[in-house]
Amino acid sequence: MGDKEIGSFPATPRTGSAAPTPPISAPPSQLHSPSLTRSPLLSTDDHIQPASKTPKSSTPRIRTPRFITPLGSPIRRALKLTRLDPHDAWLPITESRNGNAYYAAFHTLCSGIGIQALVLPVAFTFLGWSWGIITLTVAFIWQLYTLYLLVHLHESPETGMRYSRYLQLCNATFGEKLAKWFALFPILYLSAGTCITLIIIGAQSCRLFFNTVCGGTCSAQPPTNAEWYLIFTSAAVLLSQLPNLNSIAGVSLVGAITAIAYCTLIWVISVVEGRMPGVSYNPVKGRTEVITIFDILNALGIIAFAFRGHNLILEIQATMPSDEKHPSRVPMWKGVKIAYTLVAMCLFPLAIAGYWAYGQMIPVDGGMLTALFAFHGQDTSQFLLGLTSLCVIISSLSSFQIYGMPAFDDMESLYVKKKKEPSPWWLRLIFRALFGYLCFFAAVAIPFLASFAGLIGGITLPVTLAYPCFMWVKVKKPKVYGPNWWLNWSLGLFGMALSGLLIAASLFIIIDNGVEFSFFNPA
Image (cartoon, rainbow, N blue to C red; front, side):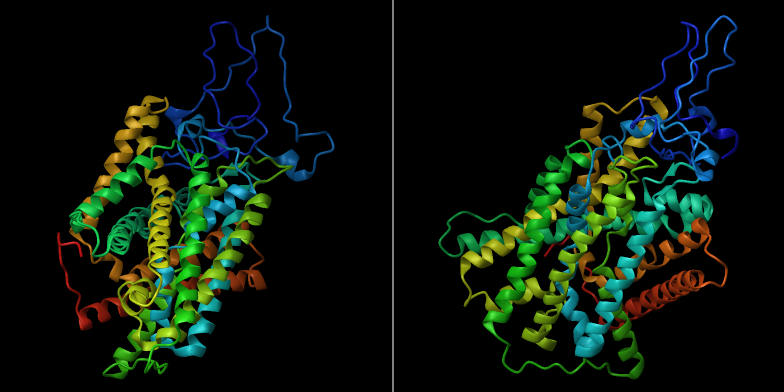
């Protein structure tokens, strides 16, 4: 790694005037993370300078890292060790590296199940039974494969690098210029855009919960829609003061449990109440064949949007300790397998049971949650309806924390890089409150954002299904024209082409059907 590399073992002792080495975020034997500077490695100004030649009067004392032995493998002997970036010890994502497979499962599950899953039956209304199930299955397997690639790209035994953030891996693989053009916007949207959507959904669920609990018996004046947005945002900002990604493991566990709960409650209630009278399963046809094709593509975008969360996988894995003998990919993949088994147990019944119960009658805006209150609000237990709304609120609050963490990390990195010290607690409070209330302003300004599920799915699809395949080919360099090479190039190119088609189709559908652009008028 050239002149910018420095040994991961402690420098040879200097005389008493030597400056102390800044604290690092992991033991010396661990693989290092690139910094948040423009280069994946520390910039020239940020380097911790190695010790100069040992003075003749001093006795050199060399400590060899635990995994370098005389009988080491060729890779071990060739491994160029690098000092851990001290900045990582001061940033929310990498401040604590004591995560494990269970923490990984909690975080992955909390980010993998979301309110976007409730609109999956809407996609089935355009695809029908067979193609709906086939497409959902293929998308699930595809995104699970790209998850596997990302988990194994997180660290490189050959170079000693750990990529603790998705954008860092993109920069190192594609170059900073290409990564900025093709990856920065989707990644930023998946963080900030998802938080905006969670505020919209969470606030609407707060209103539903209030109306369900109070009904006509409550004399209290209900808050306005904008006030519900403010209440939810304030709760999210208060919860966001937990310092780092590992510290919200309990929050993610609660969010995962409540997400499983509301998904299960919604589809079970829908099945128990039975199919709606006059339900039809014939795929919806547009006025013309072109519109029909675009409707189908828009449905594929809705399915793609249901599998967001890949932009957080590297960040979650960064919370784990890692060395050559115990790489983080082992517990991380174990956690991912646990999480996505539960994700499948939620998404497939929700899509299939929802389409069975409502068919073409499923509301486009809100999906299963709207259908539950619209069709069964009077003949279903108020306790179950209130519990469902409460689970959505808690899950949305929890998901806000994990999707907001990359933004918190990025804001604090500006201070850390400039001051060479951790950000104080009061600055962290300001950063996180600023982010939360900016999302609140955007949610109030564009409350119809949640209606663009197909368009959002098309924009973010490459992050989930295409970029990991290209990064695998670039980093791992499989045999040219071999099966692995063909597989990843084919999936990557197909994913990029599909993304372009989904964006075009979604824009066409939005223009053709029209959307009520109620700026600063939250519903």
